[in-house]
Each structure stands twice: as C-alpha cells, then as structure tokens.
Length: 259
Image (tube, rainbow, N blue to C red; front, side):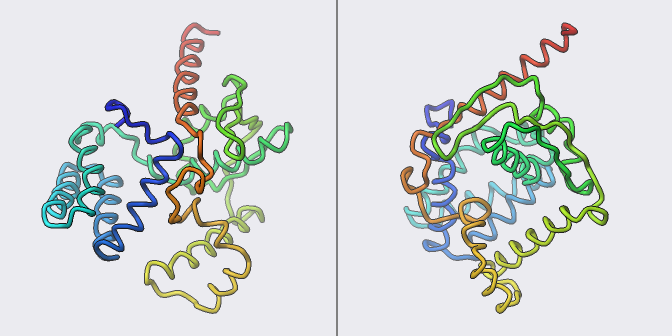
C-alpha cells in the first residue's frame, strides 16, 4: 500500500484498520465469519504452503463476491494486498514474523529505556521463539544503533535499547519467569471469554477488578477506536521502521569492512 501512496503507519492507520476490521466484520457478518478468515490467515502464516495461500485468498474472494458493500469495502484492502504481494513474498517472510515474543520484548525494553539510563539485563524463557530468533534480537538490541528519539509524546521510540545482557533461562529456576507465566495465563483466561471458549467466570471477574482490561485492550486485544486522537497516535509514522532498516544496513557495511 505504501507503493501506492497509502502510509498505514501515519496517525496509527494500521491499528485503526485492524480495529475497524475486527469489530465491523463481526457486526456486518458474524463471529464465525471473522474467525474463519482469521484461522485461515493464521494457518497461511504458520505453514507457508501454496495450498494455504490459495485457500485463504480464495475464501476471501468468495466472500467478497457474495457480501454487502460495507463488507466489500473492508475485504478489498486485503484482497488488494494479496494481489500486489503474491505467494513469493509470503514464502520469503521469516517463519515467526507474527510471533509476539520479539515485539513484546522490544516494547518492554522501550518502556524501561524511557525511564532509566541504566543498562538493562533481560532474562527470557529459553523455550520461547525469541531464542530461535536470537540473531534478529541481537541486531535490534545492538549498541551500534545510533542514539535517537523518534515518535510522538507517549509513544516515543528510543534507540539504542541499552540492553547489556540477554539470558535465555529455564522458567523452573527463575521466579521472574514464573511470574510472567502467571500474568500470561491470566491474560489468556480473560481473553477466552470473548472467544466463546470455556473459562472460569469467577476468576475472570476478579481479573477485571484487578485492571487487566487496561493491560490488554489496544495492546493484546483490539479496541473499537479508529480516530487518531482517540488512539493517541496523531502524528505517528513509520519512521522508526525506516530508521532500523537503515541502521541494520550500516552495521552490516561496517562489519564487512572490519570496523
């Protein structure tokens, strides 16, 4: 879409599009309609086969032809992207591109980076996918990245991350990791109620009282907001992505020269 003059990062457009798609398709069609497409999308991204690619877009196109104009106006974004990008790009996409381990770790580091100049020491579960993508994490956490503050107030992006050490450890021997597992389990149980899955109603009610809704909405779970002001993303852009891309290229050049 960027090639065609649409910057989805501008003013949080990518978040707004995701929120709108999630909530509107459930209203215009049904939960089952949305879940079916999400499941096929997930299968396509996890198992990069031509069959899964064709099935996802074939079902999307089928529903585009038979639904009302409101639904068509949403699905056309995704059909257009599929026609533009094609299977070859999907096949070249890293296997765990949608895994939350990397993005949540960056977000956690960014949270503390904006609050302290002290070096950060991370302890991460060795069984997570972040350990499988250690090469990418080491690039993002590299001290060679230029000092910069990007973004907008309350959504600043600060580099370098100032990570001094990353230890991949066994959760059985680290209390901190066990606590993280507890919070992750609580978030999963809270989300199950919205997916019509079995859950402990009493436990979920107590989680609501603890403030877990504020922890999840707009970070793990979609929110109904689409306006840049309501999203708190007025003035946001994708400059941080371009910055990192250029930084990685410069680091590769310096290392190739032996500097």
